[in-house]
Image (cartoon, rainbow, N blue to C red; front, side, top):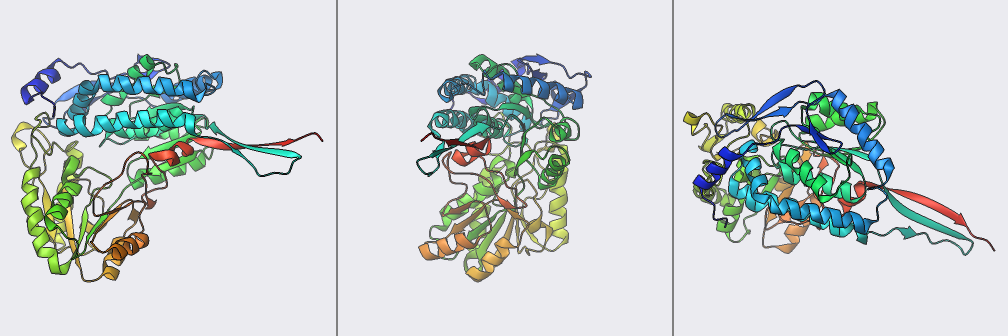
Length: 499
């Protein structure tokens, strides 16, 4: 437990002077046109920093530098063990600056400082170290040929990779993209969300300090319809990695096809089903984890367990327990280490949550808890844990990604019905199954249309397993060796040997 108090964090926030400029060719700089935008603190609505608003001209400049740096070879042709040492230095620097980076995350995005410091930063550091350690342990192949031939299958970096990341886990998601891409030898241009760009901008200076060559890692803050679109359409960007909404993911995929048919790795939206059978066992544990699955990070989580499917014989009992645990998730000052939930990222997101709640009431779902913004006097964006019961899977509450602390409880009477409800969704990012019956757990998991299934837990996993979805949740995979493979391409070399 970090010993810093609310007063300590507030004092540090007052002294903080965040960098807001773009990072191109190894140095901070203004956008070419000089445009800026203000990033706001969602806890009070006050401005944090003026941030460079990059556009097509900045993208052209950064891509040109990235292409030159990639072809120069001082990173792409560097021995994997040497890249590994630089990446490990970067991880060490991030760890040394963990409190500063955590504070930037909390001020910029609104999440509790305890989560920024104890969840996001360790995850980001671990991701950097894991990929660094993996890169010199990935081998090529030798084809099974006859004695007169030798077939080599080697892996090479893709070239210039653009990574567009979301606002909900700014630094962690950035590391999920840049760590494997850099480890594989690529040049990377990171476009952070305009809602939370500050930690990515700070990361750039640490990367240069670690020894990553100029032009190999650049950061372009700005908006999706300007610099994001420019990167997606650029003929010299070889791959595009994205985490965000399905709507934007479709648009970026279209841009990739309209330009140079660049590779796209899309990790998009979700409406995950958390399925609880009557034989789940310890309902107190289930209720506690079900609450965390939807209320953690203010519900602004792509894999949030937003659809709770409960066997009807235990539904009311489980809902009552969740309502009790929800009291532990009331929002508070994000800088207070005691806060379990912080602020919603901005007014637009807050208004969207309110709209979804109103639609749920209008369509006949039963509101059991929450439903209205709280702590409204200080100019911040706060929404409490909200629970709906008696939700029909055809209602908007069960079909649309809300990205807020809103739980939709749906009853079922059989495994067949639960699977049908869970799969009746355009999304397939994550799901969970709670049962003490191993056959039921495995059979249900196999039939769920989901990239990830958790059994008797929610959101389990580590860097050794891939993270990603199916259907309209996208096709990309973060984490694990599968992610590292995405950022490289195979080359076949066929050699005819002399007699």
